[in-house]
Length: 60
View 1 (cartoon, helix red, strand yellow):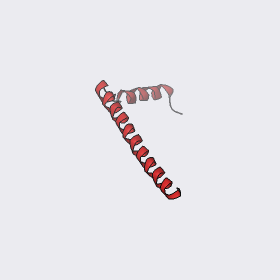
View 2 (cartoon, rainbow, N blue to C red):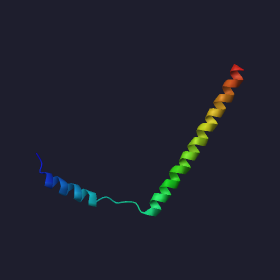
View 3 (tube, rainbow, N blue to C red):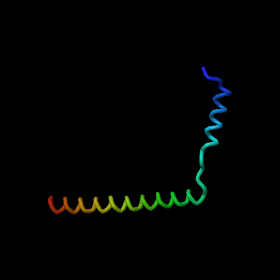
């Protein structure tokens, strides 16, 4: 079984290697996520609309 103290030291050294994004990077990626979500929702709305119109034309 591993030594708990050694484990904690390894966790601390690995945590020190983490590179956290700065405020600008977080804001940029957040805006990109919102833009992609909006584009995706518009795409699926249009696909749904076309399918609905097509089925309405076929079924009557």
